[in-house]
Length: 465
Image (cartoon, rainbow, N blue to C red; front, side, top):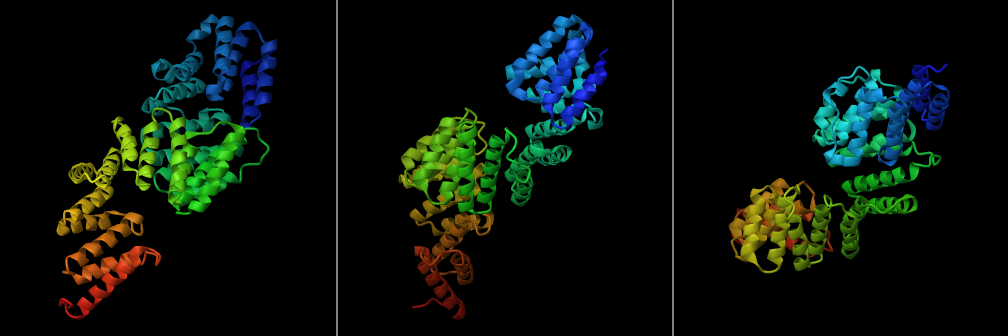
């Protein structure tokens, strides 16, 4: 005689150890021996296990659910059946799916509530997913880390990055092996988006130690690890290490799957930092080919900036104009500033000034101020130019390229004004010189500014002959 509850418990024990084959064997054996109504319930559990595989197993889930309702039509009113159907619908129809009804979200069966939560998260209803009351202790062990992962995904959809980072950490703690590595990588990806590079690197180090080379699914996940590692190294201004990592990510993708937009985009960013602009453009063009509709503005923006770096403002402007067609793109002010730079290089000073002022008003303070400073210098409006460059110094991250440029230009403008404030000119020149290599043409200019400002300070500010 088959006890359905005991059968499910045996399957859950196997799943807790990551032994899916044993779990399916337990369920299949029970299906052969159980009575008709018992087989219907077991078919629901089979569907639940298949659902863990995600989009790749929608056919198997659909077949198991069909078998369940064929064996016992009354099961179509069961909360677990309804939750699994809602999850399947969400995977197959995305935004058009029918969400699970309130009764299913509040069902006594925690397994039904779990799949209802999955359905809502997949249907991009994250707050509704989080509103389902589901203590992890009510679930079988193999679902506890997945619960935290789905909750993290929902928090991420809501823009609550800190909460999502914490939940991915909990998910990692609740599982092991490759699954733990994946959760740590999800956590590190979010950490990188909020500038927690040291924490992300530590999480990645933990994840890497979990790869054994024995599991068949490791290849693409390891590619993701190298992709994230490359981003971390890029953030730490180690482009050579980042380049090695992104090359390994691309190799693993080719070996185990297909090239991805993300790897191509990051490769372009790394090549840009290495000064290999032509290669960077090729990488960004590849990213554009691989991009989804939602990703295209990001690829076009990167491509536009790379073309601008190669002093191809006409081509750059074409790419940037394409980005402006997407009103949802989050970096539109920066795009406007880049377009202003294109106009400036094309000699369209009035258009450059108008666009840069618009970008400044919308929050792209640093790039817009750099363009406005250049335009003001061309008009020989030195006071305005100095105001723009000093704003760059205040707003830019210390030691960054923009911060150095701001100091260089501020010192140069003050020199053109006749060192009216020699102490300020000295300070700008000193800061810039500390970060300007001797091979740079600016080095001689800055040393000259520094010497003259120092002499003026020593003479009480009197103008030198």
